[in-house]
Every structure is written in C-alpha cells, then in structure tokens.
Image: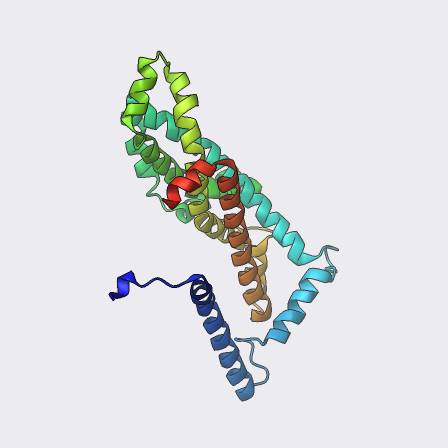
Amino acid sequence: MRLINLHPGKRGSKILAILPFVLLFAAYLAASAARHEANPDDKLLPTLSQMAIAMRRMAFTQDMATGQFLLWSDTAASITRLIEGLSISALISFVVGISVGMVPYLKKLLVPFVAAFSMVPPLAVLPILFIIAGIGEISKVTLIVIGTAPFMMRDLILRVEEIPAAQIIKAQTLGGSSWQIALRIVVPQMLPRLIDALRLSLGPAWLYLISAEAIAAQDGLGYRIFLVRRYFAMNIIIPYVIWITLLAFLFDIALRLIQSYAFPWFAGAKSQ
C-alpha cells in the first residue's frame, strides 16, 4: 500500500489535527518550567498562572486612568476597525472585480493598474496616510483597505473570467442585457467567492491593523501589545497574541458558516 493512498479515519483525523497544538503546548510548559527553575523571576516564558492572573486583571479590573476593562475595550476597538476596513474592501472589490471581469475595455484599462497597485507594500504607505489623514481611525481603516482590496479585486476578476462562456452566450441568445447578465449570472456566482476572498484576507488585515495600532493609537490590541512591551510583560503579550489568533479563527469560522448556509450549492460543488 502506497503512503499517498493511506487515509486516516474520523478519530485519527481529529487526533492528528489536535496533535500539533498539544505538542506546542507541552513544549512551552517544559521550557517555561525549566527557565523558572533556573530563575524564578524569569519574564520571557511566564507560567500559565502568571498569564491567567494578568489576563484576569486586564479583563475584569477597571483601569484607573480610563475606567475601562482594557481587554474588552481593546478588542472592541480593533474589531471595529477590522470590520470597517474589510467591509469597504469587499464592497470596492466586488464592484470593481465584476465590472473589470465582464467589460473588456475596463479590463484593458484597469488590470495593469490594479496589478501594479497590489505590489505597493501597504506598510510603506502608512507614514503617508498619517501625514494626509492624521493618526485617527481613517488612516488605520484605509491601511486595511489598501492592503486587502487589490488582491481581492484580482481574485474576483479571475473568478469572473472562469465563468463558462456557454452561460454568457446562452444569456445573450435569450436577449439578456449586460446588466441582466451581471445580476442574474455573475453576481450570484461571485458572492460565495467574495467570502473566500475575505477569508484569505483576514490574516493580512490583522497584520496591517496591528501595525497601525502599534505606531499610532490610544487603544486596540496592537497598541496594548507594544505598550506593555517596554515593561517586558510577556504575561500579557502572549495571551493577547493567542486572543488575536482566536478572534481571527472565529471570524474565519463565521464566514465559512455564512457561505455554507447562504450558498449551499457552492459548498457542495467544492466538496466534489
């Protein structure tokens, strides 16, 4: 039996999926115990109890200066910026992607520009955004848009081009206008693909958000991580990183559920 033909069962699949996390967790516990045995005041690898105490303080103790529960206020600020940025990116990408993918003149006009714009490092543009728009919310949301929209546009343009030509020809034969073809053939097929593009953009969006918050912000998960960094507060930094990862994972699950319930035909086609 060849290795490529061996498939784990349901129980084996679950064990294999969990195994890397268990090994990483065990490795951290072992390394943390070793460092604290050598130096009880070690801050590099805090123990689970140290991280739990720190996060309980961040989540359930009001900050003396602001009166807020810092973990939740930081989370609310970051999620608001993330949703705003990705929503704008999705709207722009959907309209531009479908239009460019369908209209040859727009394709010749905009595809080279979008391709070139997607090569601009978004973090290099951040100082320009701060100069033009200030250090408020606009610059942070705009950075997410600049970082994610071009790639979502290019993906949707390619997906529109992959629609079978027979569908477009039949619609035209039946007298469908460009507007009707867009609404009845292209848009329904691109909506689930837009969700896929959003899922792929979650990681970069978080990266741009954390970077912007680290440089100029008064709240947010990225701001808090870089604020406590100067105190070597790894008991806060590591849980915050885990919390960001969990939030991104939950966003991905939510988008996947929306896709499966709203477009069951698409999920079925992908599984085949």
